[in-house]
Length: 304
Image (tube, rainbow, N blue to C red; front, side, top):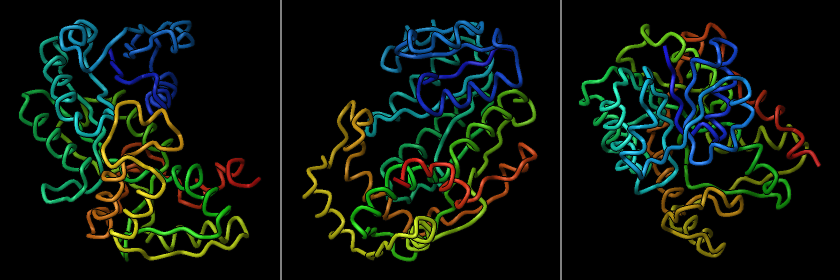
């Protein structure tokens, strides 16, 4: 069985590849990337690395030839995702791929206010109607984002604010998402047409998460409960673009468009992320990391 991983040079793609290499021979892996040279290490281990771009339908179909299962890692192009994902699903079908595993988002519903959530929902609909076998992994908010990106700024300023109200989320370690995806890919016939909620083991409000960060760092962090308008004004003052621009994710200081972030916070506030499952343990046999463990994993980032 040949397993194809899209976006293999991205952070999640690399983690999934590393997990798969512990389960299957490298010769079973086809890794897709817009920059194949960045995967020289995988090539040296025997993986088949191919150039692919979701904006090039014919090239993508060629790159998928010989694949049996596709790990479709959602793209970062907010506003273009549905088109890109649809292109990938159609190319996979044309190339003879039988099963697509897709990284969606937790708590997907057609009514969600989240821009990315609506794109994920629409992609799920395309995939379920494609005639292909599918597995949908609805990943919760990556817990790593808190200690890696938000916590250092909160410690430096002594304050942080969100417009999520009392909404709750079960943040999940990206390593656990990769471990779960690899387990599904390595044994895909056991997960045909399944939809999983991939979450951490505990529900938190954002205030609760930041209180934990304050305790872990032994630094005061004052939490501010903001309105959506207040949060938008802060983003505007920071010069963050409201609309997604291609390449934003390569800018660590301005990685997301503010419209996406605001609507994501709206979705949390309205309860769309208030889901806590044990699907990671059910699939892998190992419990998900808790939030405290993830914070400590990234101690070198915030403890300076």
